[in-house]
Image 1 (cartoon, rainbow, N blue to C red):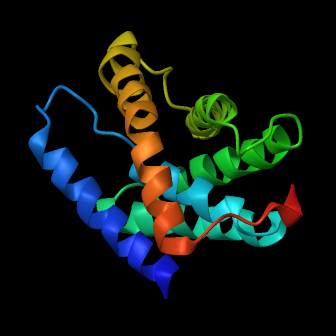
Image 2 (image 1 turned 180 degrees about the vertical axis):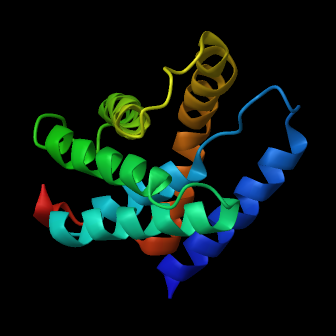
Length: 161
């Protein structure tokens, strides 16, 4: 039940932050943070499926290409599981490194899909107006969001590390 509350809160907060920021700035990616938080509390099989499902929900809610965000969030969860074996998730600095690298994996998933669909490469404006603000704002909001998630869901389970 608390996970459902976190999902609903994340969706409301994502809409609120998106509306408050100027149009030229991409808002922080709370879908990404939600996928990582839920992945951190599940075994890898269920965590990857959860991230993919959240991505499908994001695609449906934004009327985008079905599977685009699903592949990105699944890539991020996959990177999270790989990095968690090398870095300790409970350390704050390691969390930021894991989140930054998982964020890059999410965009790597996007680029794979863009290439596979035979689109032109992403222009520089996409990197400056979408990628950088989204990365910076997501990492700035991450400590607050992770504490909120821990308050709602309880302490994390390290059994799957």
